[in-house]
Image (tube, one colour):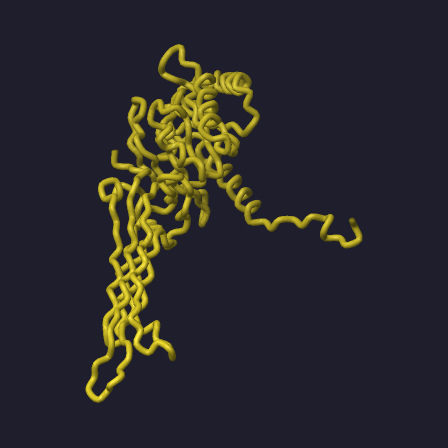
Length: 356
């Protein structure tokens, strides 16, 4: 599988260089004094959010990353050079956490963002540092401090505004092809999609949003069944979920309502916050339902599912209803973004001094 969204690495920042004990020996200078310099700082380990990367595959086979140590101090007041830093490039959306405790250390959410994930050790002091009026010839020095060493877990959560979820063969890949510039593999068998696909949807001039297509979910996905559970984490940063349902399944005896309920149940088992995200119902493949039966079938589906949110009837293959869906999604995202940017209203109890 080419898409890798989880990796474990070991990193080590450089140790600091040791301080030096030395004395100046020059002609005609009987008491030259101490001249031992400090050691250099060890190299840091940085993480860079690179928008040109979309997978963590580079860290699947290269797990150990070490920065250079600082040089030792030398005589003649010469301080050691700092060790060279190293920068690890990671996709935007990478979560860096401690592998042992699970504590989240950093999240790379902005393209070009740089964070220090391991600091190099400080250099030791040479005897020049210990010179004083009462200690004219110090022979003390200190060793360099060790650099930080960590075992990290890297987890990629794609940054998308809208996430598509549904059973295999619900038509999610066909939908993202119809509304965006993404071109995922499409076939007539389950689990065609093996990794997340991102597409940019143009709703108008300077109006766009990003949609993510994930492998199909099946019942038991939260316990590891199928492929979709591996990528449910990618829905956690979306603002809106589109639940795509095959309204006209090929197999006889398949109940679309039961399949839709199973998907909702798996979301709730996996993550309560993900379950509570805004979720719209998209009934796909209406072109395969006779025109005189569509309205009745949609009403019966919504009634049995007991769904009370927005419902869209589309055909991703013929693009029927897709433009209406795109415009509605963009308007919803604009409202959510405006609500997030609005300043919080002050509490009236504290804004009016006359009120206790």
